[in-house]
Length: 263
Image (tube, rainbow, N blue to C red):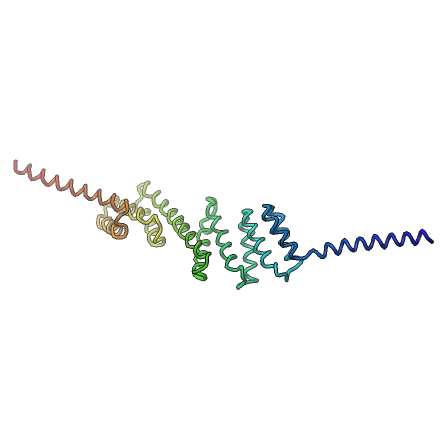
């Protein structure tokens, strides 16, 4: 009987010990998990940090740290070069928190995801256009925000990027003695990417294309547009110098012709 009593006591002790251990695990609160996640970021252990932020949303969906955990999760995926995963997480956050405290940042980070896709030459230019749309939305919606300020710089780069790609296609046609399709491409650059840094050179090359087609009126009109908008550009000076040389040559020829007629 004494042996049975001792065995029962041992079972109770073991059971209490197991329960205490279980309670300790359950009692790990959302703040501790969140703080540990932040600590792991500082230690550059991004994957482990993500696990902690996911745990908050799984176990404490109504926690005050839930929104922050979602944003940190997305940010860390961005840092790990997972833009598609980042976009999914942020899109989900915005749909649940359209006016949330982190919604502006979420919109900006989505735009940045498409922005980094642009640097990959194997990707379609559609990502560039999406990034442009996203940055434009940020500027329009929150023009005075810190995100809008950076969006303007990114937008300028993207416009120049697309304009240069279109320009290079035009140059391909021009170099292969196909001035008409070259002019079509240059026209797209001028009409759709006004303000881009490639515009002066585009007008110069369009002038060349019209010269190749012997369309003097068109080439001169293009030169006047270039001269009016970019008077100090080296491309304006190039044409000006050429035209001056032609005028001087013509003037000398006239003098020589007059001298010949006298003799």
